[in-house]
Image (tube, rainbow, N blue to C red; front, side):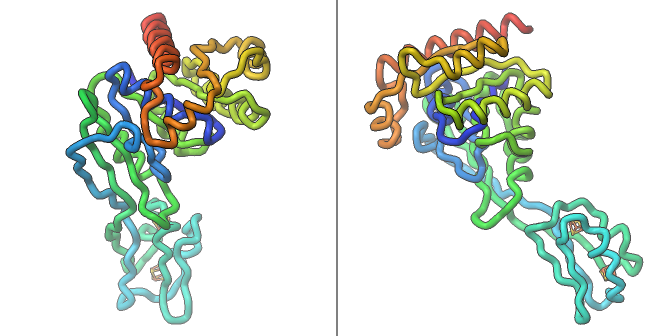
Length: 277
Ligand code: SF4
Ligand code: SF4
């Protein structure tokens, strides 16, 4: 079973819940937030090894180039610009679609490879912890994500998604069987929760909601979930000590009340997954 944890809005506690569930239930942890992976801070894996991720990029043979401009015209990503002196390639804009080499009649375009990031793996207790790390200055996380998702271990994995509802999130959820939406009771939280719900429903995915930073009497998120027939799998209470544990890089499950909340959520996820299979 692959469980993706997403949030719509950043800062709702998605990684706190993901790392807490993984450590507690013995599920492998996969940090898919490749632009800002911070799950290893909490799980502290040992024996970390890494693999470099590369992508194709065009290389122009100036000796063969006739400056015809066709490559720049066909590139939808504006990664090639023909000047009077030659073709300038902006590698970070290239999506490696191959169109430029197809239209280049003199065969002046070949593809090389360049590094865009890393995939790292370590062991935390009895679980495997994996993460993708996009290099500083790189703009396209999806190649790193694809490399990471090709390495998912057997067994239950928690896929800690990037924030938002971008193509990175869509890439991750396409590898998941079930989704957990972590949200917070605020207007922004509700707005972005609704976007994430629409994304998951467009993919026909089963999912439930966890309300983080929950206070007694909360109606904003619970009312939305009731109106939209979305199961609430648990609530995580709002308390200063939770922020203190988080900021010290420790797992929330060190605190008994949070451990119990995450144990209940893990049980409901298991029950939900069994019901749908
Ligand atoms: S299509 Fe080929 S020949 Fe034409 S400008 Fe581009 S690299 Fe040069
Ligand atoms: S491979 Fe595609 S995206 Fe990259 S430079 Fe060529 S046409 Fe543009």
